[in-house]
Length: 197
Ligand SMILES: Cc1cc2nc3c(=O)[nH]c(=O)nc-3n(C[C@H](O)[C@H](O)[C@H](O)COP(=O)(O)OP(=O)(O)OC[C@H]3O[C@@H](n4cnc5c(N)ncnc54)[C@H](O)[C@@H]3O)c2cc1C
Image (cartoon, rainbow, N blue to C red):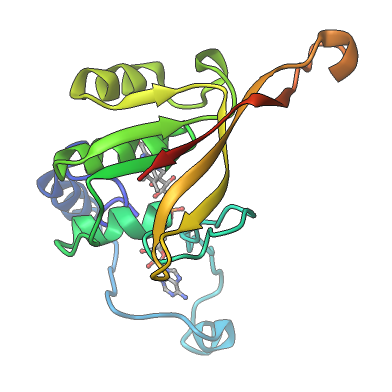
C-alpha cells in the first residue's frame, strides 16, 4: 500500500526503498512475488508461526444509483493506477466524495493531473475525518470543498458514462431528534442540485 497507495508527492519511492533496505539489512528474508495461497504449505515448509498481514486494499462503492458507471473510480484503484503511471481518463471536473485522508490524497492527486476538483462531504468541516493539515493543503492547491453536500445519484450522460452527480444538501437535526451528543444530518430538499462532472 505504501508503494502503490500513498501518493508519490507524500511518500517518495526513494524513502520506501530505503526503509525496505533497512529492514532487509536487519536480517529479514524478503520473498517477493510469492503469493500465499495455502497456509498449510507454510507449516510444511517448516515455519512454526504465521502472522497474517495482508492489508485491506478493497475500496467500496457507494450504495447509490450510478456508482458503477464508467468514470466512477474507487479511491485505492485510482491512486494505484496513477502511482503506476497509468492514470485513468478523467473529465476536466472531478468530484471526490468523502473527506477522509484517502479522499484528500485522491483530490490532491487529481489536482496534480490538472483537473478542477470538488470535494463533497455530507457533514461539515469539523466532522471531516481527514487531517486538518491535509484539508488546508488541498484548499491551497485549489480543491473546492462543499460541506453538508451528499451525492445521492451519479447520472449517466446517455453513453454509459457518467455526466452529472445529483447532490442533496444536508443540515443538522436537533440534538433532541438525534439523541444526546449525536447530531445527524438530514436531507434538505431545497438544496438539492446537480453538478456537472
Ligand atoms: C491512500 C492511502 C494513504 C495512506 N496514508 C497514510 C499515512 O499518511 N500514514 C499512515 O500511517 N498510513 C497511511 N495509510 C495507511 C497505510 O498505508 C496502511 O495502514 C498500511 O499500509 C497497512 O500496512 P499493512 O502491512 O497492514 O498492509 P499493506 O501495506 O496493504 O501490505 C499488505 C501486503 O500483503 C500483500 N499480500 C496480500 N495478500 C497476500 C497473499 N495472499 N500472499 C502474500 N502477500 C499478500 C500485499 O500485496 C501487500 O504487499 C494510507 C493508506 C492509503 C490507502
